Length: 309
Image (cartoon, rainbow, N blue to C red; front, side, top):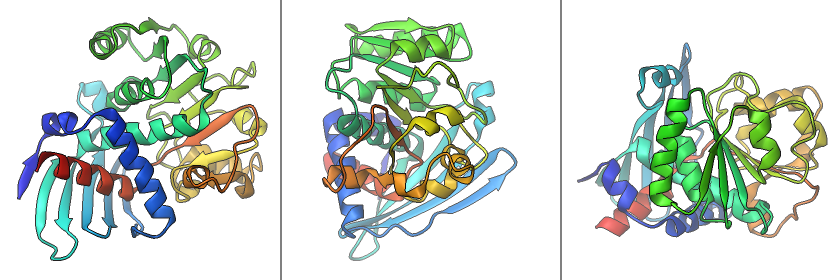
């Protein structure tokens, strides 16, 4: 059995192949090629343990991941985990992979698929709120989908923003990075806004209508008591796209607006409906919410294994 660490996963394939793999994961899930059992979700205080299996035609995978939000205060990653890839015909273990890096890569690619199908072709200004491992990878992948000229960033400290800027410019030296003093400054100036925080209350402004005509990608809220967006945004949305219908019961960014009648389930569509041309985007504001799905882990693990074997 092979062991792929973070470094190997990061170098396994270029960004465009990761995005293509996640797009295929969307399509194959919609068409029943993969089976995604309900994941086991265990909360212990602010911390979460997830067990995520998925069965495909040639492989199956299992991800065991821990999410400890307070790790950010300890300068440790919020997410740790491992992904086990097995042969789909014999059950033989093929590889174990660093789950944190695989999650970061596949989640960034999922966000990039959302941008590919929802963002204006003319979008050139990107904003990212939350600069942990997810925020960093989201920025890298998003900049492959549109001709981004300016990246605005915001986090809890100037030290975090400076470190992010240095790392990001090593990949994209031509893109201007602007640290922002407020989310309002970031949101007003950006065409695409990505949130990647562990917040329990909205991290973007609830006033000013800044969201009109923009594309918003929500990554951070993964539990019913977590939210990154205020009610006012949902009152203006004609559609909401999700990476999986399970999101309707998992993230506070959908649970609360649904409960309060700000949006209706008929307005919510899995992104694969857009990819497969079953639905057209309408309205001036585009909104995509991701909570994650085991099919993404399977297709990410498959990409790494086949690229490095």
